Amino acid sequence: MRKIDLYLIREHLSPFAGGLFTFTILLLLNRVYQLMDLIIRKGVPVLVVFKVFLYSLPFILAMTVSMALLISSLVAYGRLSQDFEMMAFKSLGISFKRTLFGPLVFAFFVFLFMCWFNDRILPEANHRVKNLIFSIHAKKPAVSIQEGVFSKVGDYLIYADKKNERTGELKNIKIIEKLPENSGVRTIVAKRGLLNSEGDTLIVLVLKQGSIYESAGEKNEDFREISFKRQIIRIPIDTKLTEKERKYRSEREMTVAMLLSAIKEKDKEIEKTDPRDTIRLRILKKIKDRYFIEIHKKFSLPFAGIIFIVLGAAIATLTKKGGYGAAFGFSFLVFTVYYIFLIGGEELARRGYISPALAMWFPNVLFGILSVFLARRCE
Image (cartoon, rainbow, N blue to C red; front, side):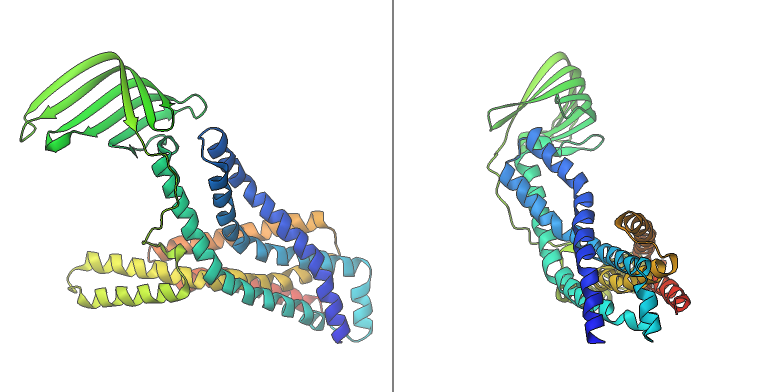
């Protein structure tokens, strides 16, 4: 029986590697487009962009490993069924349930590795990629100017309804500048503008058809308006891009130990809070729930791979269909449904409608029940 277990594990290795590679590349395509945009149109150094790409990989792998296990099970058991090897196992008295032992052992070791990976590698990678993104936005201000929001560039807050990434053209611009020594605020409004740079130390905004509004005086009682056809604003910047270390970490940048420590801190805050301060108590509870969500997610997502081994084996045995085409199509469908439940549950837990444990484990329970039901039909 040990030889059969090893044989079935070997049948899973090749499609697992192929599925992992394919799904990772597919999910990286959108990220690659964004990274190329940083290099070509926004002038971010290639080495910095490569670091962003490298630090983004763990987040992708955290999702694709479970998908790859589903692919491996579908392909392996599909081939075994098509070649009548499953029928041969049954004629030898080896049940479908017994054939799952080897693949489940393989999936269990993958689960253990991914639990360690999600706790140690993923939070640090998330932290480093956020550090880099913040550094890019600080040293390459043009990157941070987005449509429909105020973006801080030097001493200015800049807003534009529309931005052409290729030409640097801006439309319906609003700029807020705080004047020195508490002497008031200057607001600049323009219909059109052009974003350029002079060397590596200066951003130049050429504004057309607009007005400047200034308030002055101790109580901003003085006000004046100046209209212009063309106005140039030069903003000095420091373009030396270095990766700065942020002390703050969001829940996705924390290990389990960090999350448990943060939960204890919130418990202490809750104890010190006046019971009548219901708004503060509600906010603290929601923060705690976010921490619990992240803890459960670190284990629930890898555990899905174990369930997918059974699900894939049962479906492939019942349908007797092999090949990568059908396997990839079905796995996309399954994981899409799984991910909808996962994200939906996370959102409900964040709003306090359901517990974090239920939110993160419900998809596993649902697909686990389906897997057991289909596996019994294979006996």
